[in-house]
Amino acid sequence: MNREPLDALDAKLLLLLTDEPRLGVLECSRRLGVARGTVQARLDRLDASGVLRGFPPAVDLAAMGYGLTAFAILEIAQGRRAEVAQRLAAIDEVCEVHATTGQGDLHVRMVAKSNADLQRVVDEVVDVAGVRRTSTAIALSTPIEPRVRPLLERIAND
Image 1 (cartoon, one colour):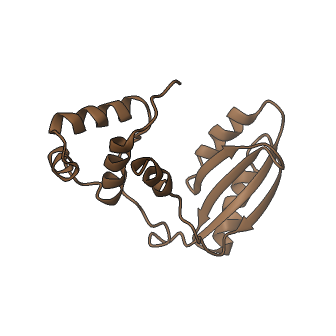
Image 2 (cartoon, one colour):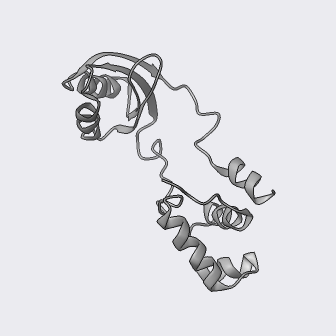
Image 3 (tube, helix red, strand yellow):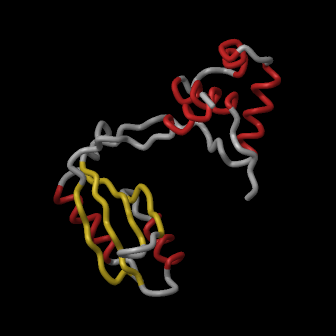
């Protein structure tokens, strides 16, 4: 998809909404010093281009009882990626799946309530037709949370 690059105003708007996702268009326009219509047009364009994918709440999985995060590298049968991904999506504790190059075919982030619960989740993953081999590692901590702020700040300050 051919997308227009973000400019400084787009980046500042996204930073503002990252920090305060409940802000309305009028308040965004006031803080950014631009017309309400400009903010709305920018949001519409960012949404239509796929840059802005929504405003979900930030949910702390550990606070929900899922304090254990693990990553699995899956080797799968050739030609079965879509089928395996669809089956993995049916496992509630699977948070994301990436098709990758290098070791393994899919990298899976999953959560669990305990080591025993993780074993149950891994068993479900292994039972997916097309999964040939898995290697799982438990995350001890998350020194850097998923982020986009540094990239937005770079664009906002250019």
